[in-house]
Length: 312
Image 1 (cartoon, one colour):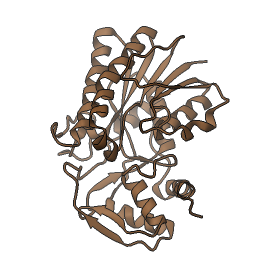
Image 2 (cartoon, helix red, strand yellow):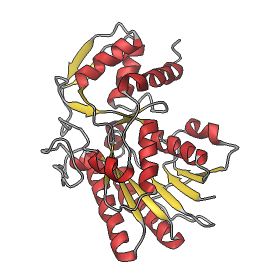
Image 3 (cartoon, rainbow, N blue to C red):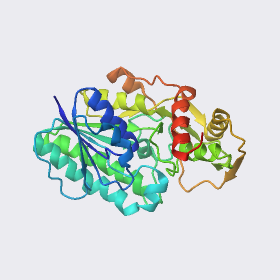
Image 4 (cartoon, one colour):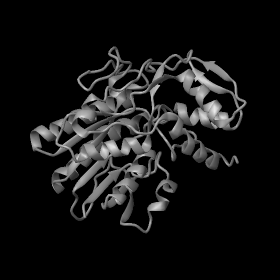
């Protein structure tokens, strides 16, 4: 039975990953300081071969026993979080990644870094391929997240080249599904909470900026395949189906049966205008592509948000 560490294991994606790993026969240790994670996300895992450790990975990590795999997902991940927690975001991407890589080296474990499409910044290439170096403002408000992840990737590759650590890098594009936080601030949680309460649905800018939305179960399967693959190069995992933010807002309003109207607000600084993954590498190397369409994925996501908001 493989023993696996998931940092950020109580988060949205981290908790889905922990559950998937248990289903694959792993013994799972989830580590989270609960800064943005939620214990409710992992309650269903208690009683299985699962251990939760409350710990901040920016501090030294002491973990007894062997480890086969490490999935490093610890980090604030939504703009509302990393704008409120800029220093913590930079620290988990630097000190945290360094500490986790030290564990991987000591335990001879294979490590996968959860990177992000934000390493591409506001891209000048469309769709975004892994060989594109990005267009990032390092001193803008979003730079704390973008550069933390870019630094993490550089450190992971340094440990791979210098120490021979087995490493994997996934660049995650916009993902949605149950267990997202209501106050997450990203489009799906914001639109759903507003629409379900029949409040104005807030669209930033004119809504023509695009996103590509991948359902959580598809993402986790792709991540697992990447961990078991032989590539140390970054791999995009996301759904290449692109739509505008305005169309997404309309779709959520229709799917929730809401009476909400759409209102526009100023576009945040450095907000990406386009976002679409080129998943050629994932298709070729991993044999992976998303299966869950947006209309299908919205159904359980809406049900989850109804439950969280207490709306029947």
